[in-house]
Length: 231
Ligand code: 5RP
Image 1 (cartoon, rainbow, N blue to C red):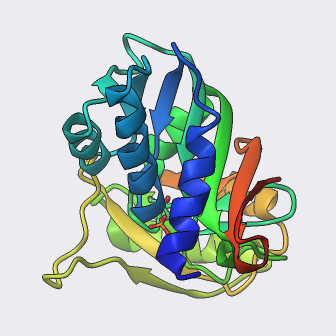
Image 2 (cartoon, rainbow, N blue to C red):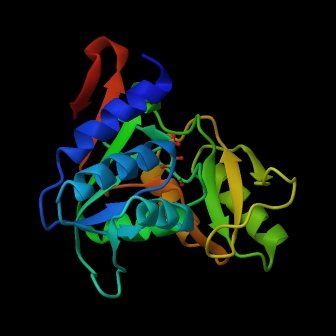
């Protein structure tokens, strides 16, 4: 199966978890986009749900798919969030933010009773950190924040290069919240909890892409199963 087919298999399995009346968090990225598309088809068949999108892109896609939208102001507790991930380990710890939506994704996941990750099986890792870890920062004081992030990584036992994310036009990538993203390249993160605490304590850091204790299940599609399994 192609990567696209595996993502579709995972997304289709996740749609089966959705029940009438549910309040949903709608993730961001190519796999979450397939979920939104498939959910839209169910809505057109009569399923009644409301969704909170985790990005402007997902907002547009969900609207186009005919999914009723709400906000966390109107609906502060959600039943289920379905989102993609860049890496997932055996303890359902995640790296997210490859698409730059980590801040809203984390807020929405934290407001959800359940968060199910959908991904192709290549996202499963023994140790987090091969995928660059996004750190969302405010533009003010960028140089100082970047230095502090580097020090936090080194103290957590995973030093690595830090790059400022740029967009296709070569200019600095701006998140939906108007922030910048520093991508850290530690290679492996031996203690994700320690690193998460250190990054969260830094002035200038808005959020980081370590999602710890938020994911409650994962649907990882792999060739061998010719489908998708919930773990
Ligand atoms: C966006 C994300 C995405 O969920 C993550 O990058 C996975 O994306 P894809 O499904 O395209 O592989 O965290 O901020």
